[in-house]
Image 1 (cartoon, rainbow, N blue to C red):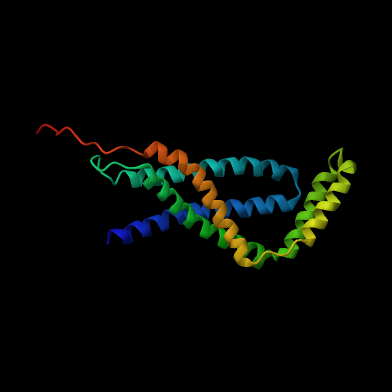
Image 2 (cartoon, one colour):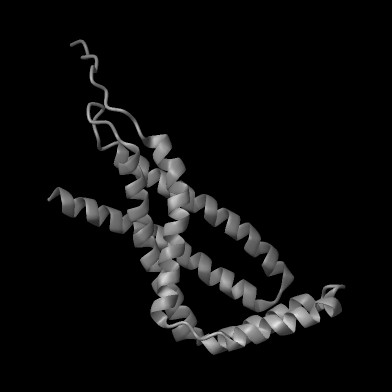
Length: 191
């Protein structure tokens, strides 16, 4: 019964993180495809807020998990780090599926590349150095168009690996903060 509770709790908590990351991905894709500089600035603020929220959620959920272990048992670093990675894997599945559905199902990957190139051209046309960057942009667009279209599974896998990478980096800090050695000689409370 305890294992079922562990996995269902981890899946629920990872799902919450995954939904936050998926909403962020949708907004960032919309903002980057719009070509509007105001949205690009807002996207930077949103990205910073999501990084902070992502860290906070991972920290909060790991703290709740660590509180389940008594002082006599302690909470080793590897247990906290493993929990962060498990949460990140569940979040990555949600994010990866959201990316795959959005880029391949809703938008279509070819349309996504076309809109991305058009918005980038629009943004850079407003720059005073746009004429100097034109050869580089043409080469970049040619490379994008020549690149093979990733499969739905590759797109989903990119979401999973990205989430695990961020979780792995955050997990080093979070697991270090919440790890504790077993207390061999716990003082007994006076009755």
